[in-house]
Image 1 (cartoon, rainbow, N blue to C red):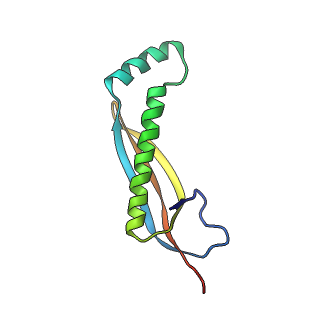
Image 2 (image 1 turned 60 degrees about the horizontal axis):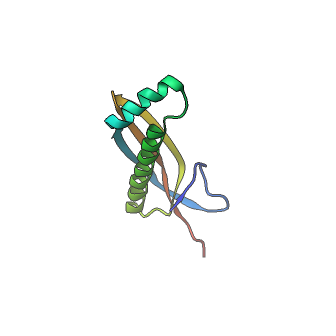
Image 3 (image 1 turned 120 degrees about the vertical axis):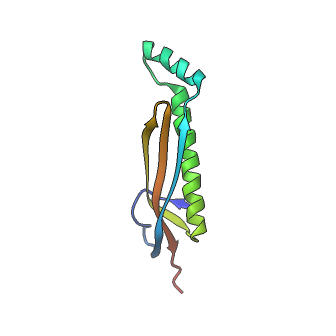
Length: 106
């Protein structure tokens, strides 16, 4: 499945099938919270949170792709990501875009 952040596929005729999305709410674990608190004292990247958000994005993308496959899509265009805090210690990550079918002219 092609995933593109642009709103079209160059030199390709497509049919829009609809918006698709994948979402996950991921929580921090106590070990990561403790280490993150320690990291704020010295500065720098909080690797545990980076890993958590990367994992959440991968899951959100897989769910978006699964939804697109159910529609018979060949690609998803206009792919975007979003994230927000939904409660203390939990973040929502969403991936969304437009599922499209590639038109093969004969």
